[in-house]
Image 1 (spheres, rainbow, N blue to C red):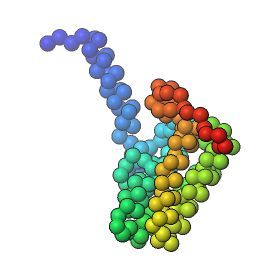
Image 2: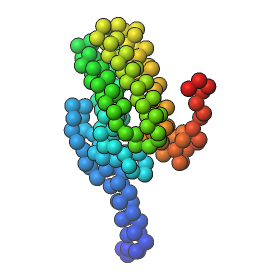
Image 3: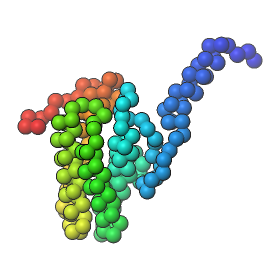
Image 4: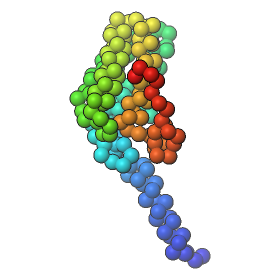
Length: 176
C-alpha cells in the first residue's frame, strides 16, 4: 500500500481540526461537572470567567443549572430542597456577569442585557424560595427566552442569526 503526501496532509489537517474542536481535552471541574477551559466567542478575545459562568448556567450539559432547574420545576411536586440552592446560585452568577466586561459589543448594551438577565434570575430565586410554582415556572420561561438577545449582541453565533455563516439577525422589535 502506498501513501500519498496529499493523503498524509489531509490526515494531519483532520486531526488538527478534531483536536481544536474538542478543546484538546482540557476541562475544569466545578460543582456542575466538567467545563471546557478558555475559549470565548469566535475569533478569540473571550473572558474565561464569562464562559465558565455561562457553562454553569446554561451550557449544553444536562448538569447546567438551567436544565436542572427546568427539570425539577416540571416535576410534580417540585423538589424545592433541590431547586432552592440551584436558583440562588443562578441568581448569584447572573449578577456577577454584569460586573464583567463584554467579550464583544458595547458596555451599555452588556449592562442593559445582563441587568435584565439578572432580574429574571432574581425573580426565579424569589419564587423558588417562596415555593411558588406558577411564578417560578414563569421566571424560568423568561430566563430561557432572554439568552438569544445577549448572545446575538455580545457573542455572535457562527451558524445562527447574526453569525458569519448564518442568516442575518432579525431586527429587534419596536420599543427595545
